[in-house]
Amino acid sequence: MLPDNSIIEEHNKPGLNEHRRRFDFVASGINNVPGILQQIKDLQIAIPSWALGAGGTRFGRFSYGGEPRSLEEKIEDIGLLHCLNRSGGAISLHIPWDIPSDIPAIKSLAAQYGLRFDAVNSNTFQDQPGQAHSYKFGSLHHSDKVVRQQAIDHNIEVIRQGMALGSEALTIWLADGSCFPGQLNFRKAWQHTYESLQGIYAALPANWKLYLEYKPYEPNFYSSSVADWGQSYLYTSKLGSKAFTLVDLGHHLPGTNIEQIVALLLMEGKLGGFHFNDSKYGDDDLTVGSINPYQLFLIFNELVEGMNSRGMNHATDIGWMIDASHNVKDPLEDLLQSVEAIKIAYAQALLVDKSALQQAQNNNDAALAQEILQAAYRTDVRPLVAEARLQCGGALEPLQAYRALNVRNSLIKKRGTKTTATGL
Ligand code: PSV
Ligand code: MN
Image (tube, rainbow, N blue to C red; front, side, top):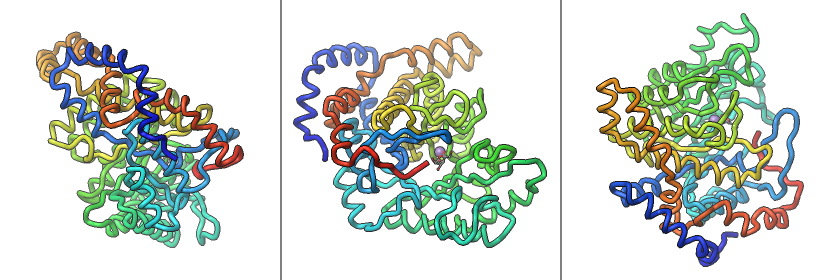
């Protein structure tokens, strides 16, 4: 059940004067405020269907209560987020965790909430009940052709499901790899993976994209078959113009310069999708911007610079998605915070004085370049993001509104305390 517009308006009222004061202050220092607001409004972040419940770790999982029990309830949750922040207008499904049983009904429910279907995700990292062949030793790279074919067929089935929903991209993340030296012949594993990807690519509709995600380790701890951006790029560039690399922020070894990776992939026209999260050590799946918001800003700075240099549409030419897990926070609050952090970093990147930065770079003026970047980063753009949201009918402060509307308690009342959402 969505809160009525009038309830959101009523909730916004007490904060409007202060908001206006803060907005006027920041807007007075910015050229082209309407253009910037429009760009902030246009950027929509897809919410993964598997991030609406408690994630947990291999040591335990602690439920929040009121978790969505079905795909319909997941759509309701994302609809609610979108109603509050007007920025999460898409859902990304993981198959088979979320196979729609009645496609027309699911489509009309999503449309009711103003949601579209973003990339569909395949899963060959778990065995499903009744599955003929196990993925214990991998899927697309497997030494046995029948296992590879089963994984190819699954991906083709995911494309079919996505087509019925109106998705236009398939995301493949492979857990394939090895745990011990000598376990795999790297060259053969690469060739098997490539041939399998070719089989999937051949089934891709003309208007679809294939995103290949990389990850250095976990669940395999010695090698991964798509371990880094270079390996993903090698596959996607050989596959063809519909194949792209997907950057998941958590899939880098500590200290990696992700902004440079993003810049180079964009330069080559091979950055297709993005999974946002934050991390301290590894694939920690923490709230976006909670650990290193400056890095997020630097990444957005390269995204904006790179997309502008190729004349790309910021909102539609890259698949923007959150991929996080929630161990101690209410998942919906975590997602609201994540979307807000993304919008803030994006708005700050839009404010970078690009010609001054270019000049500083040409003059090798490292100190001035830093001043220019940090002038944008240290601008409090929250009133800009809030104004964009308000103009679309959203809440001035989505997290506060969520709490004031007592959403979690109503979900618990409706769904119970012991519900479990599908996902990891
Ligand atoms: C793998 O760690 C990953 O980032 C992939 O995107 C998966 O599909 C997702 O997480 C599963 O939670
Ligand atoms: Mn991911």
